[in-house]
Amino acid sequence: MADQQINFSEILVGPIEQMIEKIGQGIAKAQTSLDKAAIESQKSLLKDFKELADIGYKVNWYHMPEVVVDLKIAMHYEEEKTEGGEKKVGFFMSPFNAKYQNSFAYSADGASSLKIRIVPIPPPAFEIEK
Image 1: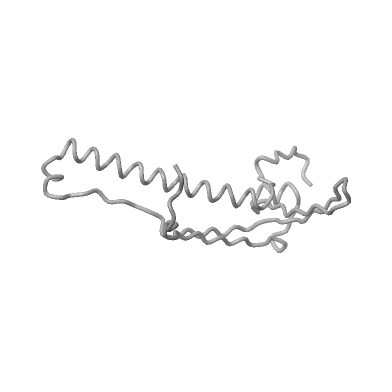
Image 2: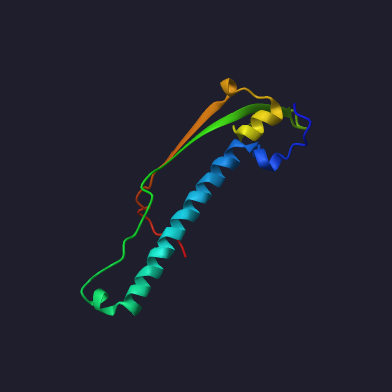
């Protein structure tokens, strides 16, 4: 290992479920930003270009019909026993990048690949309580 101090926040070591959750939250936040921009553009059109709105012009809406995430990762498995004698298992991962490779002298040959495909689905048929 190099003679440098490792900043673990830079190499993003964390439980796999937490990283997948953060990826999903990031995608949802990006889609919300796209939707808000379209709403603001339509409001601006109605206010500043009423003649276009009067003939039915509408601004474009953008969405991500599918998002594919393909990460090269360094992955490890940990197992620990709880006080009750049960095994607690966890998978941890870090995106494989130059910082990780240099900090841990990790070879690209040992990197795993995590592929996530996120697609929209129709909303549920039932009412969600307010």
